[in-house]
View 1 (cartoon, rainbow, N blue to C red):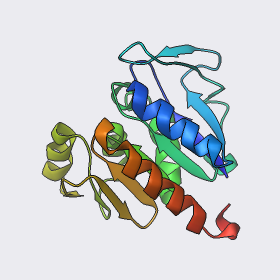
View 2 (cartoon, rainbow, N blue to C red):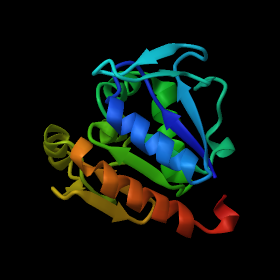
View 3 (tube, helix red, strand yellow):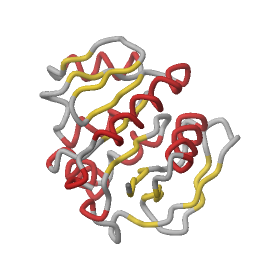
Length: 175
């Protein structure tokens, strides 16, 4: 499957690297989509770097089968840009697999996609989503139809496991 990984500076190093590597190891084609193609991005902890391969202006959601949203400061930075919000919103509208960890669901707020799904997130994001009426629980990993969410770096193994299962059971017609 072709997976878009939306990313900006300040991403949580492990929440990017471990799922990104696991998806590639499982044979999926992962493309980093961000604000400016060629931009060098740095993780919040300074352990990881990544290069934006496609900009939101040049990438179309229909080119991808699934979406990965790492946490850290990245989702907050991305949600300030309408092209990024619209990109994420399109995956919900098309019912494509979405994997978001930690602060990742922050971008669901301006996209208006927090309703109708059961989910989890970092503890402060949980309260934001709950106040907006989302069905939020405090669990290691939550799978609800096309959405997989987790709370924090310690949840990465469960997040990867359930994300890969979701991709495996996505019908070939949706790919």
